[in-house]
Image (cartoon, rainbow, N blue to C red; front, top):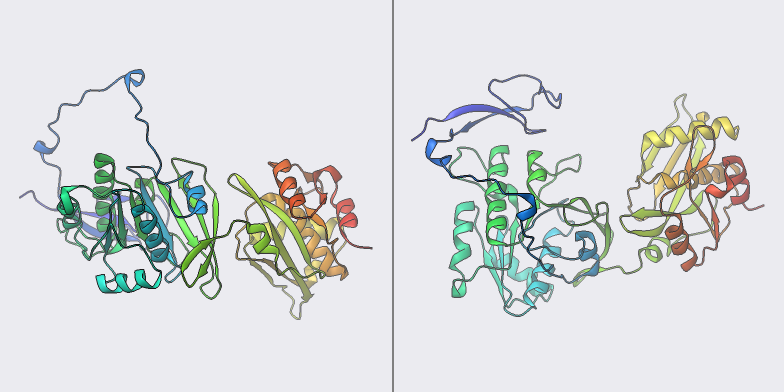
Amino acid sequence: MPKLNTIYVCKSCGNESLKWTGRCSVCGEWNTMSEISVTPVTRSSIDKDVKPEKLSSIKIEQYQRVPTFSAEFDRVLGGGIVPGSVILLGGEPGIGKSTLLLQIVSSATKHKNKKVLYVSGEESKEQLKMRAERLKINSEGIYLLSETNVDFVIQSLSTMDQKALPELLIIDSIQTMYDETYPSTPGSIVQVRECALKLQQVAKSKDIPIIMIGHITKDGSVAGPKTLEHLVDVVLYLEGERLQNLRLLHDTKNRFGATEEVGVFEMTEKGLSEVKNPSKIFLEEKIESPGSAVTSILSGTRAFLVEIQALISKSPFGYPKRTVSGFDLRRLDLLLAVLERKMKIPLSLYDVYINIVGGMKIEDRATDLAICACLYSAFQNKKIRSNAVLLGEVGLSGEIREVMQLNRRTKEAKALGYDHVIGPMVHYLEKALKIAIEP
């Protein structure tokens, strides 16, 4: 057998080094280098006749996306599941990842002669059967396998009925898989990387789409090496509060469609059901009060309305508190400085709280004006016009800048009865806030 060599791999970024260092030379993190053993590549494995091809001579095979049970899920993927693609689904424990995949599996088996293999490394077959019965899942065409050895999983693909390959493979989860070639525990950097690489090769060579569930870390990113996200074609995150019914599915990487798409679901007794009108859900409990404003955000190819709330109170200490939920804290500090300078509001003496209703996380700069309006409304204790939607990026000089897809945002606002749009056409922050606040 080839001699095992020892290398050191960074847990944060996956950087490899021949010797241990206290700090990773790539990402700069401390105490993240862990020791692993690897087998060197032999000469026989690289003796292969490799011949480059002309780009103009390569023919593109037409592929047909596989639709799922939900238009919201298909929207995030770009129209459905692409054959041979590898999808990584992350999310907190108990958020509904397995429930979502069971519903996808059920929808896939409704097509004629469709078969799905569900591999579970965390739950037994009996547990999955109980969940499927509770969700009233169509079990015809669904095959269960409780296994964590990735080689056995790949081998089982050809042992199903009629020796036919499944049309979809579910791995729940990639952190429970292991390759016995590497002497490390399941969930380690090398195991996650090598198992994902083997599954990726199976997906591409046999045209089997694979959906893998990934555990997440404390900061909300998928656990394991960063190369895991590079190996897959699509990276999805399922988010939401476990004590609330709303669930948000968004993609951070998609080789087959637009990124930053968001699918909105509601958790019910029968599983996840799609929300066809997210704007209505986000605004259905809106109360007209000071410190509340409505804005339109752009998520991929769709625009919908959300409510933003602000609260300010006199700070009892010398250092005021800034608390945000769903918004960038550094961006808030910038807007507070603009408001204090342009509107003469002494916000440095007040605690400031910002909340994006519905659990949304907003990075769209078009919400700047709505944030400023909320703070100004809360300070003046005056309501914002009930039929107004505020749009615009606020500059350091107090100017209101243009935003992307303004027509689409305006159309969504008018469809829900918000016929008064305050935005870049006003040009200046002072004027916009005076128009927005009720007399």
